[in-house]
Image (cartoon, rainbow, N blue to C red; front, side, top):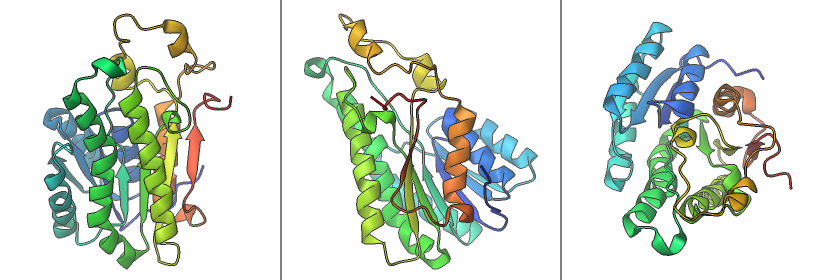
Length: 252
């Protein structure tokens, strides 16, 4: 996959302290972009910033809790104020809580929706005027959970199905305007989410196995490359698409 030249362009990547967010930010930096990075983990975010600077790229680290919706628009303002433009918004940040639906704490449900669905909308809302000025792009990271029901992660599935719907609805709304809006739907990857995957007490493991990838976990680098590709001018023909990268997890 050829990532387009991002020299002179600015990308905003959420969830960039680790995992797919960090890898996507680095891919964009390697392509020549200046990168603004957001995450609640300020210490790990600083490590990502150091790695980007090591590539000779400008970087702006913005520690923030994306569950606080009123923080989203100011983040975009800070990026545009610092760099003078915004060419790509990559909504990568996400959380997952495993629970029996009848026992899930309401605060976990709300936090899942706030970070996985509301934050991408609020960031997009603030970013779109700037992206229209430069024929930019939005890339939303949804999940194989946007295509299939997965036991014990009802809130996560709801947020990811919602994010896919948001992607397609916005793509239709801006069909005649100079912006591209797409999604990537990865399967299980070796990220913090996978490391901390703990089924709830009493879970039926055979139900979890129904959405376990038969070919193993997806490589983070592969998904990051797709995120960076869709954010770049090389993906000029992609709009309203959702690219599945799940090693066949959602095939049947």
